[in-house]
Image (cartoon, rainbow, N blue to C red; front, side):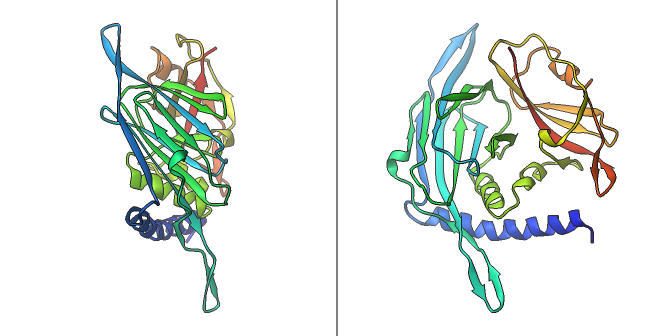
Amino acid sequence: MNRIQRQSISIALCLLAISGAIAQASQRDGRLLQKSADAVFVSRSKVSQANLTIRLNGLQAGDLINIRPAGSQVSATAGTLSKTARLQGVIVSEPIGPGQSLDESALSVTPNVVTFMRTSLTTDMVFLDIEAPARARICVIADGKTILRATIKQPISLHNQEWFTGSSNLSGTISRAGLALAGFGGALQHLREGDYRGVSFSELQVLEKHSPKNGSAGEAVMAALQIDEAGHVVDVIPLTDVPPGFEQTLRTWRFAPYLVSGRATSVSTVVKIVFQ
């Protein structure tokens, strides 16, 4: 059994343990903080579109934010996860379960703004799952700094200051938060379809890159790239609205082969580009 197989088994076992935490978190009053509002749509060029600003205050790098486009409502669910060392015979385990309850004031939701303030100073992991209107223009502001301005098409998540493909439901968000808390933060990139090993964009060496054009200044676009063993981009999956020619341009990018135990491996990653 190689290292990747052992890690896959460990992740699978961890997911089984986390599923119990999901059930507990759902059953205990006050563990999940949930709020919602009907979205307000604005017509632009005969297209009805909602605007949503997400304000995040006091979050720690290890916390996890998931944003998913769906329906016509704005809703947000926040909670915490913790792990506690337990001695079982001669083995020390660290089961994952619900952490401290969040204050009611930590989360507010209006038709156009979701605001979250991290009120817990403990080591508990905070997760925030936001359901945004489909094709809404989203602006994410963390501690007063704009970190994303885009129209998302697919779920995205933020963890350790990096963007990943996200979860399409609340249970998936809690599972991902539990994986990160259990020490499998790198596995967030592995939760994907296909035979591509997920990696952070910062882990890759770009050999050839051409800048996409036709984007609006200040607008961010994100896409998942699937890269073969030779470092060629074989597929581009937009996670946000992208300008004409964007996918074709990214297909011309070339990377150094990504090596695992000395062997070139197909990988997937998420790239974020902000037009100037």
